Image 1 (tube, rainbow, N blue to C red):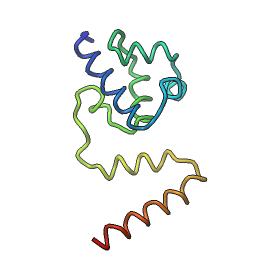
Image 2: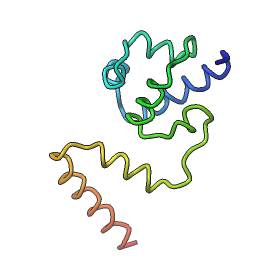
Image 3: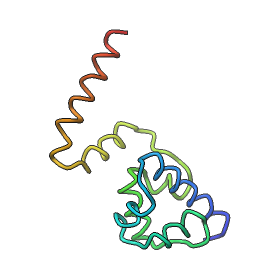
Image 4: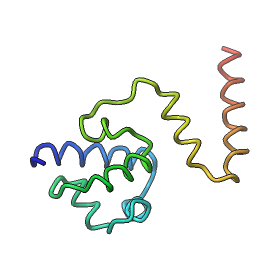
Length: 109
C-alpha cells in the first residue's frame, strides 16, 4: 500500500479507536498485535495483513470499506447491531435500560 493510503487508514483506525474509548494497548490486545505495531499502523508507517484488517473491522465495529476507503456503511442499524452482538451477557440488561430511557426521551419530544 502507498504511504498516503496507509496514513489515511491509520487515521481512521485511530479516530474510531478514540471514539470507542479504547487505549492503544487495549485495541492491540484485542486484535492480537503489539502496541508498537498498532502505533505504526495509526501513523501510517506500516501496512497490515488482511487478517489484521478483518480483526480491526470487527473490534472497531466498522466495515473494511470504511477502514480502507473512508466509506461508512449506509445502514447504521446494522453497525449498531454488530456492536450489540459483541457485548457480553452481563452488559445486555444495562444496554436495555439505556435504550429504554433514550426511547422515552424521544417519545416525549
